[in-house]
Length: 579
Image (cartoon, rainbow, N blue to C red):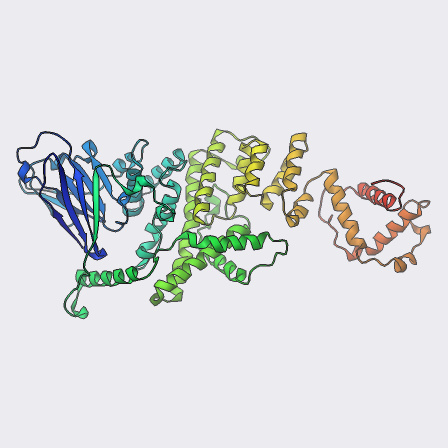
């Protein structure tokens, strides 16, 4: 419920109008500096026209300005779109026309006897995203298209194309973060009353300090004021239709004004996420008690993700275990569920659980959908996963987009689809120089996942450059992953390492007195004149069945090399050779 009032216009000075947002308990008075020019003949009667347009109140001053005021999100001026000059001109509503706003987003032209249907032009809103426009105007246009226009695949594709062509973050806001949060808000907030007050709708509120570019509009002064609490007389049971809904909205407003921080912020996840990361990277590998609970959350989310059309997907995601992202998915579900239970307990735990799991699933699907559209736009194919080849310009563009999505989600502490880190590392090793790639790894920007390292060890040959890259990667791996992937590399050093571990496992529980009595030199197939090697061979054959064989189902096993390694170790132990 909005009450609009226009103050008397002072030509050559300014126009002042007040919008009272009764349902929000506040009012805002706007004062706009008018452009200099000759006053129209009917200037004393010129007043702003107020038009109701869905979630906006449109204030139109003929030949001066057009102001779309957001009725749902009035926290900042940047969510309201202000246009002046040619941008704010409406041909059908030129100066001197007597028009009246009627219901259903329509205008009645009293003089011409015509009724106009009013609507927002998506193509014009897209033009406002072009470079050179004020960032507050770009944010308002982007927010309008993502949240308030009806879902339109063509418009969505154009927005994603714009993001991929302007991938670097703006000074005042991150367009990728805004796209993710605003899109999720539109998908989710209508599923339940009050969700519009609890779910995040913009990345701006995650900033510690609001940029000046988003807090003011050139030529526009805004004075906010709190309203007295509205009271609807009569019994609540007698209210019907609009008045019943308004009464409910006012009750919700009083509640959310009384509680601190009702809107969920993704920054609430960061502290717990840091602790969980430390626990996962710890050598002790002791998971927190809540880890099992978090994993159950993740399973629910992944079961709801639309993966049944995997054969039609071109971006290979959701095809591997990604422990870090699985934990982050479960943690986000846990924190958002806790927040909604605090403010919407009347819905019940089952309903809230469904809302939260669906929200997380839509997040993963949204990121996957963006990657699919960009991938198809760049005409990429399965060859991208081949590490042997150098990346081209299209693959570099894809890497840049994916890296910016990684930065955006990391800033909001939001999860990515499983497999995202592996794909990004594959593109990184194809597109970046080796030293740059390793710097990205050292700064935590790229992850050395087990599938990625395994692919790299098997796909790349043992040229000097590739050998140096493999050694650089192996020394950066955690010990438990290093042992797994090093077996996939056919190289003398890794073979020697495997042999030492194998022999160590055989001799781990060896009893010298017991095995020495069982030696039978006459039956030895090794070197009969070299007793130390005979002894070692007999010990190994006695212990072999009790130790796990690392060479089972491995193709690159050099038995002769294992013998020579054992002999080498024996000579060193007996002091006949220096290590």
